[in-house]
Length: 249
Image 1 (tube, one colour):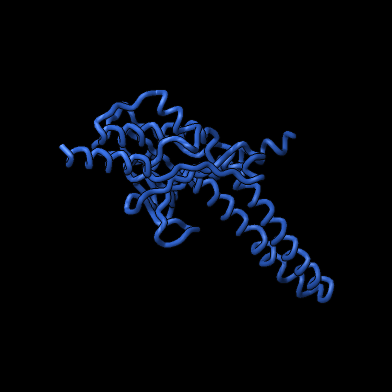
Image 2 (image 1 turned 90 degrees about the vertical axis):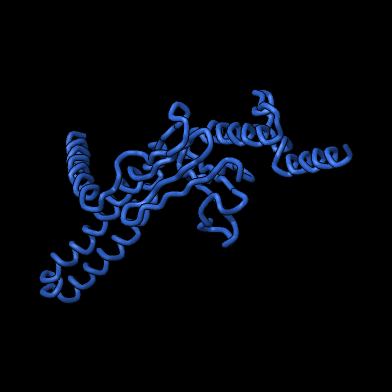
């Protein structure tokens, strides 16, 4: 137990040093992006949940054991077949086995620490990346759908993904979907329904403001919890009815 704690403390110390060097060398911003034009009092900046970091490490350990076992058995086979050659290449073999694991482990932490989600009164911004920093800004009036997805491994760590689909032009192209589908992905959050409700509340406020109405808390609750509640198609029909009534006058 004492040895394990010492290893954890040493790893944290090494990572803090690597983080300082990487952020300085690559000029990775350590603070969340600033949203110009938004009301500062309504801006909420947050990172993925800590369970997301453990989720990434879960797949890291699976890949580590799968690859390292193959490499170790390969080196042992060489050592048995040719002890001299196996001894000579031992330092190189162990370097190939260990060093990539260290690099990937550090990269996982860097990925987690450089991911930011920012919600304001009008937009959603997502920033991630180390070498190439990618920022996606989605305006609430372009949102078509907000969904929550969770796989079995994510359930183990108590996290979900929030997927925000837009009408186009307001977000980045989906990594997994067709080229004409625009989405924003909030990975590894532990309060997905709360985030979904916040987004839908701002969406409702934007849509009802366009119709000259005011959003009510009852309407917000209905949208965030009921899939049959108001959606952009309903709003479009209402606008058509409003235009027809204006023409009849």
